[in-house]
Amino acid sequence: MKAVQYREFGRLPEVVEVPDPEPGPGQVLLEVTAAGLCHSDFAVMSRPPEETGLALPLTLGHEGAGTVAKLGAGVTGLELGESVAVYGPWGCGTCPMCAQGKENYCRRAAALGIRPPGLGAPGALAEYLLVDDPRHLVPLAGLDPVRSVPLTDAGLTPYHAIKGALTRLVPGSTAVVIGAGGLGHVAIQLLRALTPARVIALDVSAEKLDLARTVGAHEVVPSDAHAVARVRELTGGLGAQAVFDFVGAPPTTAIATGVAGTEADVAIVGIGGGVASVGFGALAYDAAVRAPYWGSRAELIEVLDLARAGAVDVHVETYSIDEAPLAYQRLHEGKVNGRAVIVPA
Image (cartoon, helix red, strand yellow):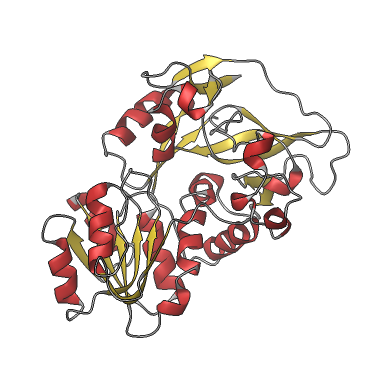
């Protein structure tokens, strides 16, 4: 089969031929219908394998959807040909966090060498994907896999972050979304669907600010040296009650804490290497800063239910599997508006 692999540090991924996988006991083989690209892939590829602990070559792709092609011995509850989405943050399945469906916070995954597909285990950027356990599959139930596959990360991650701030987002409140790209433009839709808050979107790209307005942002602000003052002006000097930074670079974490109001919830979601300053006088009184990661299995089901109800729609650009290196290049250059999706077929 064809697969898109990270094969050598410092080089773009390559399309190669690898053997078709076969499911062992308890495993499920999917024929991939769609796989999403993510900036997290660059976070993996930007560090030498000896730092990340990754074994190369690695088939990329931690956003995956497919149809059930083969069932390993003992697997029940799935039908051949069934269309499913893959829950990516695999855990041990038995620790207290996994027992709650919060495999994104599994306490044993690192010690057991369990890694998400595309981020350690062979990923979805291939014609077939081997899934370790049927619990990591969620029925798409009529959803288009191409438009839905980004929801497994670009939908689930902001949804998890927003749920943690819902008590702050009451009528009259303001939410700030920093970065209106793959995750941010979905976050705007989720905020509009889940809360009565006014949504202010920030980005350095005029094109992405246009997308932010199209998907529901009440206000858009260039993410520049004047961003904090502009958001403060829009909020009457009070600042926002919730801030979601989907970039996480040093300039944006500074903006995130700078626009936060008293008792605000600040979520640093992006992995751009920025660090938020926390301490008395460093940010507004009683503001809290957190760094959420991905989301739970139950939350993925909820996100897909929202999509099925028409509350969220991902803006996607599609590419063939042979065009994956081009898609990665466009993503790296900031030219993808929304989410890039590889369609192997």
